[in-house]
Image (cartoon, each protein chain N blue to C red):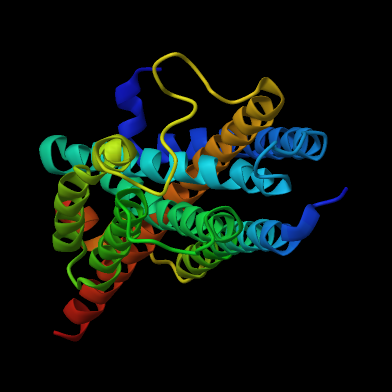
Amino acid sequence: MAIIDLANPTRFLNIVNRALPWLAVATVLVFVFGLTRILNSPDDYQQGATVKIMYLHVPAAWLSMMCWGVMSLAALGTLVWKHPLADVSGKAAAPIGAAFTFICLVTGSLWGRPTWGTYWVWDARLTSMLVLFLLYLGVLALYWTVEDPGRGSRAAAILALVGAINIPIIKFSVEYWNTLHQPASLFRKGGSAIDPSILLPLLVMATGFTLLFFTLHLAAMRNEILRRRVRAMRLIQAQELAEARA
Amino acid sequence: MNLGPHADFIVASYAVTVFVVAALIGWIVLDYSAQRRILGDMEDRGVTRRSRRSGKDSQ
């Protein structure tokens, strides 16, 4: 099957219907494995048991940025190549990304109180993450409130591309500015600074979150394709009713 | 398992995550059911994705 076949929504739906149960099962299995690893993981020598918040906070942060990357690619597909599924993909990804960003902000705040002594500071990392959440809300508002879906999609795609500037700002904020948030401890020069007993559960949970994202994204794309079919059928029905009355 | 003096923060983090993910899954599942039901109802009423007029025009 050529990649171009995926441009056909009906073929895409067939593939999604086949793939979704497998993805869902894989997601559950990885999460169960990850949670057993968390239960058996040691406490951090400084932070104690609060390090267990990291297994949610860090994957949620990664996924919130990856989801914006998916939306930016989808935006290119919408604006440049006018791929029929690109807009569907962008619209489906936005609420999922917003949810992951919300989880990242809340768990980070709950981790910050016992670790730093405060729920929130306006440092570069936390603020740029909050900006990402607000950008997600902006994209959702454009998708859900603009009356003409085509105009809303184009505006949301432009915002997704402009907002992509924020992703490297988030990533490098802990290096360029003095922040209360710690610098990168996994993807950094010299390798990971995390002990393998804590790193393994973190990577398993990150895999689980990634599988969860793709499962939910595909399911939400399927919903969006069906919603557009409903809209098309309603428009045809309304047009035929109007013509019958004329 | 002893979560130490900050157990409330750890439990709250997991509770919020479970709640948000469950809400997301619930919304997507319910949305799927709703779209399938609406499409089924419309197909039962004979509404198709192809306009009858365009079909006649092409004949």
